[in-house]
Image 1 (tube, rainbow, N blue to C red):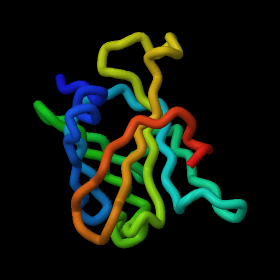
Image 2 (cartoon, rainbow, N blue to C red):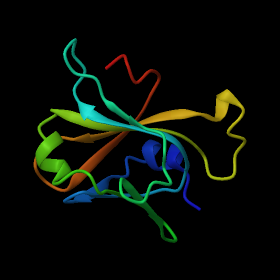
Image 3 (cartoon, rainbow, N blue to C red):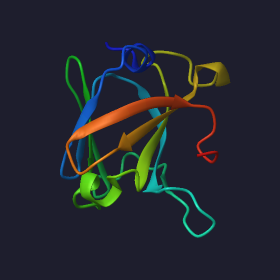
Image 4 (tube, rainbow, N blue to C red):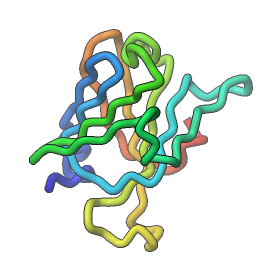
Length: 128
């Protein structure tokens, strides 16, 4: 299993293909927030039902996690040029999710309309 803390620290990048994100790590996802950059007029959509097959698909490989956002079209186009981001609230795979010290926010950034994703650990998803 690949640690998301190590992947972020090592500067690893993910990539996007249309509505599908490939992340270079494994994790226990608690919630997902997706949306435009924060402002007084926009708030991110929070996804907490990770089992609903019509909304989100999750697949893992030996060294990656693939998230498919079925309700969205081209994520890089919609959120690129720093217009938006996706935030995962997650814990390392196998860690105690009930210990708040194990929970982290991972900001996934789309800097242009290309496939490459940036990854960053943040303290507060509402403080962007």
